[in-house]
Amino acid sequence: MRRNIEAAGSASGRAERSGQRAPRSLGTGRLLLLPVLLLLVLALGACSKNSVLSTNADDGPGTNTVPWDYRIQEGEVGDLIGSDMTVLPDNELLPNDNNYATGQKVWTLQYMNAELTTDEEGRNDVRLSGWTTLKSYPDEAAAMADLENLKVSVTTDIDVVGVYKTEYNGETRNFAVLELPSGNRMKQPVDEGRYGKLKDAKTASVVLEEVHDFADYDLAYAKFRGWAK
Picture 1 (tube, rainbow, N blue to C red):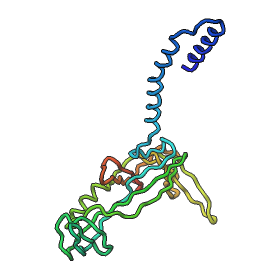
Picture 2: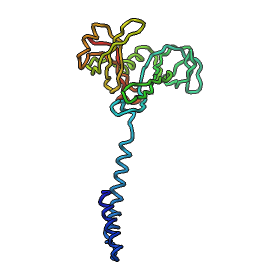
Picture 3: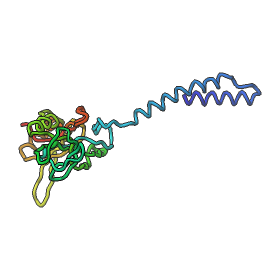
Picture 4: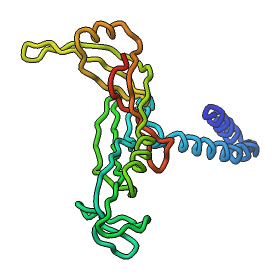
């Protein structure tokens, strides 16, 4: 397109030098180019936006916030403040949705997220948040039911990037580098037997823990939890 514009400009210059008026179609061509250029700008702008739903290292370096962990804490209702309550021992202020009374036992679901910064080689720098209380429950069974839905154990095959050995204080250490479903790479110490199994392997059977976001269940992050066999 640029070559066409330059060629048209050269033709216009030659026409002016020869005393002839440049064709009026050139101005019309410039007007026609504007919508095309505008569409290109919009398309490039859309491609440059990174979705937080993607933690794939293949997308290149970047930072994503992912769900990292949940836990259940036992507490006791402290002060009632309007429609809210404090939960001891940390005096966290929560909505008193279940009409709890002072001194009543409650269980709370707490959440932690992580900010992952991925470099060009797929390695992560992880920054963990503090614990945030999401919800209260009148009994432990109800709390555990939610927890089991948010932290799901799965067995699957993942890619083996490779294995390597290092020496430290005269001792040899073996490591395996694995690629998680998110595209991020991690390393795990392995014994000599597993080192031999993985040395020429393309995949390995592992146990992963899928941690789902409380507000958006489709947003999940898989963490290595051990070898399946």
